[in-house]
Amino acid sequence: MKTHMLVLFCLLLLECYLGSGIVVQEKADAAIPVTTLSPPEGNTSFLDGTTWCVALAGVSQIDLQNALDWACGLGMADCTPIQKGGHCYDPDTLVSHASYAFNNYYQQNGNSDIACNFGGTATLVQNDPSYGKCLYSAASGSVASSAAPISRSFIWWKFAAVLLLLYWRSL
Image 1 (cartoon, rainbow, N blue to C red):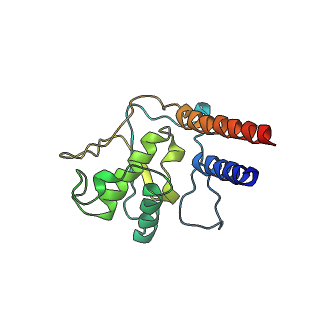
Image 2: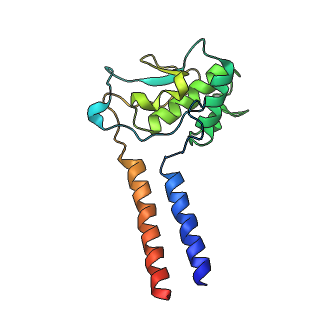
């Protein structure tokens, strides 16, 4: 029982570590972007008005596909609308799908310039890229706080602490 709780605790800590938005890059020259926490608001560059993050024209298709795969995978962007039958599936192009995924990630991660990099395959724009039924989310004016991801991580750490206390009590 004690071993089982210890294994559960270790797995929970690993999940907290990976779920907090910190990813270890195995290769220094990896083409896939690495999730980083948004910088403090004082280090964030602001643009007047509303901004969106879209795929940069003229980048390598391989780099763009890698960045899209990352955004929809480890980046946890909501890519449902760019799946077949979704509101943003058409046009069925890599640039269109990557733009939607990049913007979704950017809006969920503090609207800071660092959240719109994707290994150099993305850029910020001030023109709404929405079209037809495909609506790109946006935050107007200032950068959104990065407190939500931190507080979510904090909840996991509190849960881990409770499990640790339960484990120690069972000794």
